[in-house]
Image 1: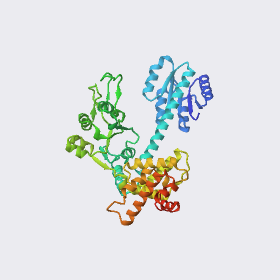
Image 2 (image 1 turned 90 degrees about the vertical axis):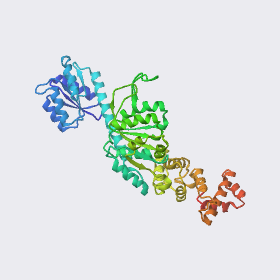
Image 3 (image 1 turned 180 degrees about the horizontal axis):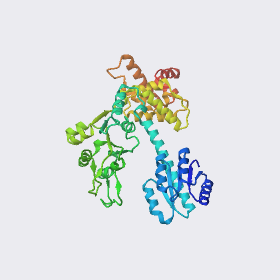
Image 4 (image 1 turned 60 degrees about the horizontal axis):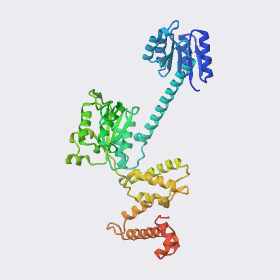
Length: 452
């Protein structure tokens, strides 16, 4: 095991016995017979765990503990103590010791204690790595965008990240509101604290209050234990309230109180708890219209809308389609163990013309389906879902008054070809017969319109 344990014990027999046992368990073991030697070893070596006697000449276990923590606070210390000094060992734990064990040493218990510390250290290390990866992935700088509309969104997100101000993110479904909420969190000073999300549209009204604020045991039928709410879970971090426009008026009053007073109570309790979570809310609804209709409180709207971020739909920022599509190709090719180099020019041209009613989420779905169905190393037009070029056909119909004569003719031809292919079960020979043209002529048209 790649963990180093320092054993500090002034009795030579005990020192050698413990060191030999731990070495057999696979740990790297260092030894020190005196506290001063132990401190020198900690200074000069990467020590993970110190197993120290409580009573030693020249320095007590507590003093050694404090000195070790000054050198390296991440070193975990286990105190070995006689039965009569257990209270002192417990006091040492209050000062930062990881645990204690009484003499004579139970080697099995010692093994368990060390294994628990190793697992905790691994978990802390994994969490730190995960948060670093999340910070890199969701930082403002890490979000892919080439459009001026998204540049403005990211500019506001970056400027508000270090503040405690509430943020209201608006935009159509699928535009990436949660992604921007995460970028606000992970780009700011709270990035190493929890990011907790709650979707108000996914929960019935009677459960939403408990989900936000928690409840005490017996607060209502079925509340068989105490439960922390999302406000408590997000303490010190960010609470992302998605679909905030779905919160009923009765609960809007309680949410407003939390934002005003920075305190709340669990259901069934009168004990106020501090709300120390930064609020980022999102909605695809027009809250100002809801305020005028009386279905959303005006005072709550102003509390949430301290900083407003509107995410434009994908059809308003088509410059972002190519980099997003290429990102999704790489991701889904990796997930499906497929070697796909990219997207053909014709397929990309088709993607650029589509209107994306489902926004970025729909683009992601289109690319995922195309990667799964693709037989080659490049995404071709015929790998794209039928709805894409049907959507283009409907948007650029030959009956459109804004289209030129040439565009109307081409749109009409595409429409005829699509209908024929569907009627022929995608068999080109039969489709050509239905159209009254040669198969060679049909292939020419398919190539011309990127419908290969």
